[in-house]
Length: 218
Length: 218
DNA sequence: CGCTTAAGGTAGCGAACGCTACCTTTCCTA
DNA sequence: TAGGAAAGGTAGCGTTCGCTACCTTAAGCG
Image 1 (spheres, each protein chain N blue to C red):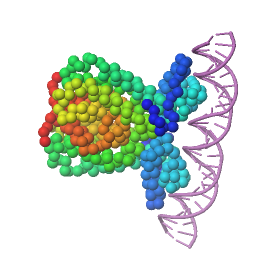
Image 2: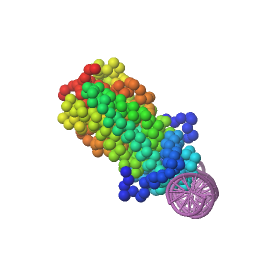
Image 3: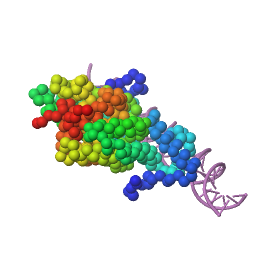
Image 4: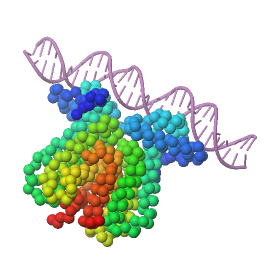
């Protein structure tokens, strides 16, 4: 989780119940500040005011503003990963026919992303401004991608590509990227449509099915 | 291009040749600074040093740091739009069969994005941190999307969707988003693969063809 | 309860940053 | 070639921001 090369971006874990609550308030305040003041407005003072906490309480857990942002970012990623693991461990998917499985996986991907909409909008969006987050981002997104790919790969025999694993990974990479972009950037990026609605999910699912399986009816 | 509501983010146009060159240096310096110091490092002093220019020379054209970033952003968008228009006006595409047309459109989309790789990496990536850019972003991306969609729609009769225009727009929205993500975030986001290579282009083209036209051989 | 340590608040230092008043140099036009 | 406008430089003001020294309060434990 942490690199020896980086200065010291680790979080000193809170030991008592009170400080755990305080730290949770700080992380949530971080998201809130990013949400309505952007990365420019993400100052120590702003986070402290939002969390009703003094700067020292903040520097008791973290070593710098950089480390604070990283903590906010990774806390959200952990939430996404938790949801993703619940999905990957769900035995219901084994019963589905390939096309239904692919559609279901896309739908779940989107619904998980939507459940973390506020975080994706506020944090992931501006995370590119943060050098260390950019360095680490690949691991997290890769882990998330593998999880979805793993479930879909139970249908590997009917995937119409020479390398099914690569095809599934590529496909869900695109699905995830498209969804994130859509949610995080909203209508602002590369898509004329305003929201993530049923049509979007159906469309994305259909694209995945056609790409992985060719034409399938039903 | 500018809103009455916003404070004053317009750029005072340079009148003499010398100041045009200076301004070009400033815009380029802005990209360079964002490239290797991130949004945090995008300070007036840093841009001035990079461009070998005094702060006053900068404030002669622009009114604030916010306006400077907006100018850097929009300068790059203009470059993308120029390339896109060249593509849209190219008569060669009318001769292609539908599947080849879709593949060509995808390839051109990617190649245009690649030609502006440095800008996409440095600027678009962190543009989400900028409130006004987020407000305006939709127009530009929409305009870019329409351009590509327009060319492909000459094949509207063979597009296997009830609403061909919507399908094409949706499709190229995804193509564009995937490409940008891939280039801007590099390996860091939602895709385990490291770069934009021929395989990526072929894959993306195939996805588009299968989505829009169903299975087509050759 | 009494001792130790963790947690949190107050107040403010030092540095960096956005921006500008003031002045000099370069360019355009008559 | 003189006059005025545009362009650019020097130096520094006022503010904000990241961070910390110092002190008070709360929690855990025998």
